[in-house]
Length: 408
Ligand code: FAD
Image (cartoon, rainbow, N blue to C red; front, side, top):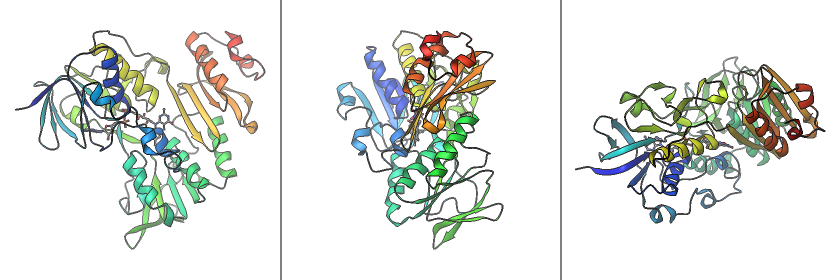
């Protein structure tokens, strides 16, 4: 005997919750089940490396919907359960307790697991990742006995954690393998700005670092040894080196993909009636000039989920949303719109030393992205410039005394 649902959603995070909520908004009247391997109701992940880590936001305020929402909307939840395999032909999912659930449509919204560092000591007490509430709760339990922290990886999550922990009075060291921070997602002007800001506040930040091993003392991490022989003493090590999309069951079932599962602009995978959204969904993005990308952002998870829910509710649409992202470090609010990868020119509007400026990225004369630091107006108006698809004169765009919208 197996349960049968019209829609089964695997993953009770941002994309899964949004899919379920929009299905009901769109008056989908079928049965819906959402399966999630975390014990908690769907919650907002960004505060994990910001206010929640800092102890400034209680978990209850991070819930994506009030606890009563799910029963009110007749969305069944199975939390603390993991989907382990998919039989695409039979339209069935198997869970880690052996339960079998049949589906009319399956939505895969599993995000990703933090990439582990491959070296001796990677699993010692005191070595952490920042992906789930459980991760951050474990980390916070050790804060009282921690005075030195090494962060491996200078992406957004590593830098946000570095900012919070440094504000809490910890001595924070950041080591990055590449030659600048945020190298995967931002241009050089922005990287250099954030490097200066972190260093000015006492963060020890260096590049080209390769980790040899995590040093141990009595079963716990006592530091990080680099390949060049440097030893960084620390009671806590945070590994922030990206995620691996959680798509093994789908790939094992025959779905196309590799780094994520491949979906079309309606979120459909190559398996019949199987969709994917969010961090795990690789798609040809119009804002990346058609390149296949995976985006790891709230905007992408929400917008892809909305598209899939509409498709399932019989109101088909296609995913073409302009990518957005934000990051809070210290009192710096970064808002990003568009994708800067592949840009051929960039100009800075305003002065980084004023801590209010934007980097505007061009490709073949057109604006493809903006990184705006404490510059909300540029962020809002820049979106319209990207959407216009027009070419702009970089020297006019660089003039901070001219509002971007006046260039349209
Ligand atoms: P998730 O929200 O990760 O949800 C996936 C869920 O599926 C998880 O609960 C996972 O445990 C579960 N799961 C995985 N495999 C299975 C399985 N087999 N069976 C059942 N359940 C499974 N984005 C921004 O735009 N701005 C930010 O400032 C920002 N800050 C962030 C800070 C942190 C610390 C993190 C971790 C992320 C941040 N993000 C930010 C990214 C954003 O949170 C993600 O892009 C978004 O949550 C992706 O949604 P998702 O549904 O794809 O995955």
